[in-house]
Length: 193
Image 1 (cartoon, rainbow, N blue to C red):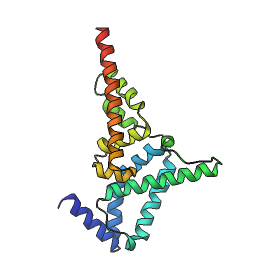
Image 2: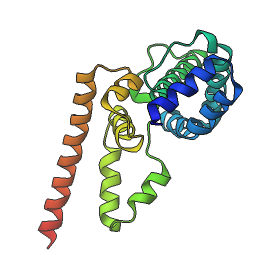
Image 3: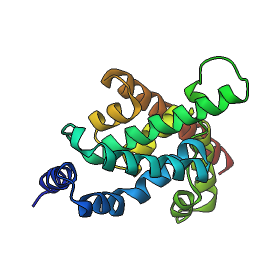
Image 4: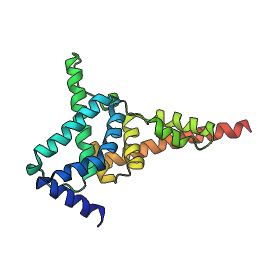
């Protein structure tokens, strides 16, 4: 059974009220959702609250759920929206006025991901970290979804609520920035030799 058929089966079971379906969703996706949420806002309690609300809403509204093309992107998008809404509410509660710009989300790469990168030479790893830190938060998010969560372009568009061209532009800008920084670093190394 391929993953699409498996997801369809789980989603159908959820809509039919089978409790093992929500258990399977939590078991399969909770960890990925949690780490994605932490990257968005770095507030463990807020992310856990949002996830609990999502699982409860899925169960309570199961009969009204429409068919989804893929569960993971649907859940990532749901979590992203819920976290942003809660952050906006906190901002309003703290008497901040105005829209909540995407750049304030504080999307960061985790320590675990940086540890994996440390298998290469220490100097190169530090440069990669510096390059990634220079990306905008939206660029970091698109890179994370594409290469760490392995989402398709359409799934990334759904999660980030972007048009396909905007997502491609964002990804290309990130690649250009990374390429430019690596070129500068390479020239610096060559000049030191």
